[in-house]
Every structure is written in structure tokens, then in C-alpha cells.
Image (cartoon, rainbow, N blue to C red):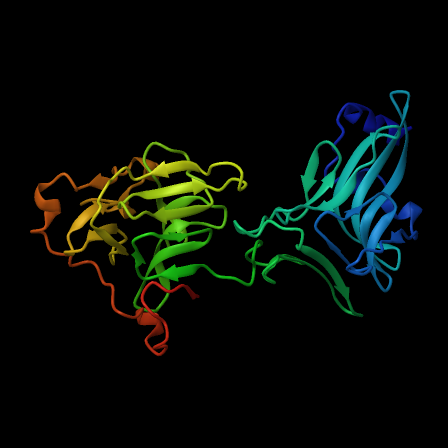
Length: 361
């Protein structure tokens, strides 16, 4: 009776997150689910292969799947709780997600999406991994793999390029844990960068100090030691799939669409400079577009510096377009703060790293 009384207030809510404490999950253990048989093997599934109630991916006596529990009668209806669990030898190792719904409703499933996200549910899905692949990597070839030995259990989701998108157990960075940001010392006309890719400068210890570009979620901003210090004025966040330094001098953020639909512009610097040649970053974090003569035609921060600002970083200063000045400011020499050596100082021992080439850090 106490069990039913506890559940009654939640009868109209289908999602019971982290509900392990509401009952003794070991009361019905040990029990085993059927091991899936996919083309990847019993310990792996790829995009589009679903794990249904009573199924699991398996290696030895370790199972990761969708288990069901009889919750009894609630409001006159039989209810079942479906849970995504990791078990060894039938014993619970980790509970991930749970949904309590009438037993007559459609049963939920566990599936790996084209964007790499591992989701659980039916009409309303809950994320298990919460990570999506980089733009351009949406594919049928993402793979979830379970591995185990006597001491450890690990799960990984790998994208089409072979990079690990998500892993369990997780420490530190959750998505793409083995990758760091891609850094450029300079961007040239008609070059584009994508997620977790930036213009960068380094401090005296060789650590990244300033980064301007798109973070791991596709959000555009200027960061100092990983903390946001500026984002485009007047917008909460600008998100897209890539930042394009166009051949007319525009900086533009685009959201990529399927090939049969036009891409969508999310933001633009609105500064036309046909002679724009390269984009650089100064040692104190300003981003500048220079023309063929080395004059500044666009600047992110202008003469102001954001680090002392305590209000919303969006309200610091507007982007400044200088192309309306006489002769595109041809009389102005390159800002002395710009330090764009032929080789990044951090990679002076690697002569094969050319200006503008992506380098992993």
C-alpha cells in the first residue's frame, strides 16, 4: 500500500527520472535480457538499429539494454516502468533512464540516431549520451560498442571518421573526449571553420589564451581560457554549422540543410570588403580582417577590451566595419598587437605546419 500511495501523485506523468529509490530494483534480479543480433555483433549496434524492451547489447555476462518492471495498479490501470540499465551477472551496475507508463501504451526503445545521439523513449525521447556528431558526419555509420573485462566496463559511441563521440564512464569533457579544439593562426579569404574550431592565440606558457570561433555546440563567441568574453551584439547565442570568411569580406554563420534545401544564414558581420585577404587575432583578443595592403577593414572589438566588463558580454561593443573610410584605410598600418608569425609559436619545432593549417592541440 505504501508503494502505491507513493506512486499515485505521479500517475499522470510518464517520465520517472532517476527513480531507483522508489522501489527495490534487486527484488526481481537476477534476470537476463535477450542479446541483440545486429550486423555489428551482439556487443555493437549502428545507427538505425533499435534495442527493444527485453533486449540488450551483450559481452559475456554484461548487458546494456531496456528492462521492465511491473509497477502494479495505479489509478485503475496496470503500469510498467521501463529502464535503461547496465548489468553484470544480472546485478545492477548503473541505472541511466526510466519511464513509467500504462502497460497498454507503446513500449519505449533505445536507439542510436543519425546525429550520434543515444536516445530512449517512444513519442518523447530522453537523451542517454547527449552528444551529437560534428556537421557533415550525420550518417548510418555511428556505432555504439560495449566492452568488458574482469575489472572494467566501457561503452563508446564512434562516428563515421572513427573519432569517439561519447564514452562511459565519463570524466572531463563529455563529447568528443579525445579531441581538443582545432586552432588556426590565420584564416584566409573563402576559408570556413566548423564546430570546436577557432582562431587562437597563446600565452607565455604555450597555453591557448584567446579563441574566436564555434564551440562544441556550434555557438559563435570569443573565449579567454575557455570562458566567454564576447558574442555578437544583440543575440543570446548564434548557432550554426560553420563560420565562413567569404570572398567578399563577410563573416557569415550558416546552418547547413539537406542537399535539396538551401543553407540558412544565422548571422553576418555585414561588412563588405572585396579586398579582404585574411583574418587574424591580436594578442589581447581582438579579431581583425585585413585587406591586401594590411589595413584593418573589420574589427570585432574596436578600441575596447572586454576583460574588465562585468555585464553581459553581448553588450560590450558592436563589430566595427571600416570599409567606408577613405581608400579602405590604406594609410593605416597593421595593428601592432597582431602577431601572426609564419608558424605558430607553439609549433616552431614542426616546420610542416603551414599558416592557416588546422593543428590539433
